[in-house]
Length: 125
Image 1 (cartoon, rainbow, N blue to C red):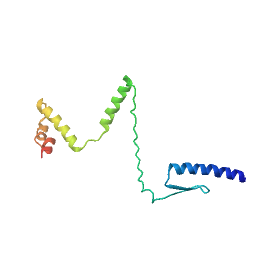
Image 2 (tube, rainbow, N blue to C red; image 1 turned 30 degrees about the horizontal axis):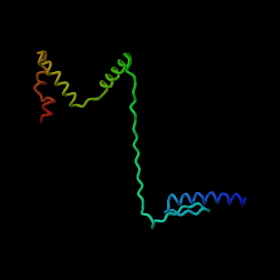
Image 3 (cartoon, rainbow, N blue to C red; image 1 turned 180 degrees about the vertical axis):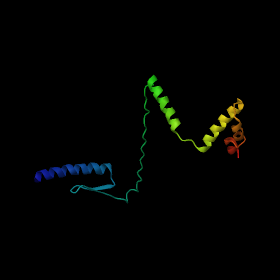
């Protein structure tokens, strides 16, 4: 047991010498393996680090005909189910009314509506 302890101490002292040669500001106790730094010999260090993560783009093969049809159908369903604001609905109605007025297919009842303020007039105010 004593020989093993002395062998361990010799190994530790060898490591302490290597450590002291590497960093002269550190004092190491080989029995309890504690490291004490002397602040008087060297100034305080500010350690900083940074990490940069980069996500590689996912490259996929081109869509086949069925996938393209499904994708366009899904986009159409999403557009139909999306809610429009009152102003958007008003602008769409104004556009339809202007097309009918241009084609002379406007009813008498709709003429009164055509004289009202349009969505574009509301934006210009």
